[in-house]
Length: 248
Image (cartoon, rainbow, N blue to C red):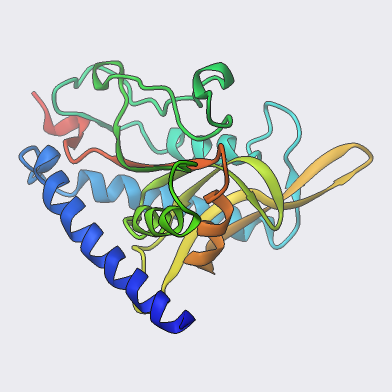
């Protein structure tokens, strides 16, 4: 009975993704086709993440103070900020790219802090758009929420930034990560890079581990966000990102 239910969920997920992609695909597709700038930006971001992972060499890094780059959102922001120069949006070539900050706690209500970023317009340098989102809906059954969470997570693509408010094995609260590979339907797995999901405190100071191309069954993240007041958002780099020198 359990196996049959899981097969049904997988079929529903696949159908849901196909419908969502068919609707969403045209949004930025018209702006695509001007070289590999977007892919090069993603490659550079992930290359720096891998370098930071190797540099840490398995040792936890200080992730306590606001200036520490190994705090989760500070880490993903650092990876982006170190690689944004040389790129721009085609419509706003003179505006520096900027990764939005988290939405303030009061603005997240009735959900928990960390479910989303500020909604900054592209004209102010925001090179991301919301690819998909999930919010736990208490008017739905637990099974329906699980199905919706799976459809959401299965849309993850390499280079997406995942922002979530969740409760998982290692902690509770906001967390930020970058997807390192497209969702693998065959393995039903999720791969990402981040900092400070895993960590510990010593003498009142938090230390966090850097992960690169970490892998978990998608069910790990379904369980994490499928709880009242929790949720997550997938942010995707726009397709109209260009090399700065390619523009007049």
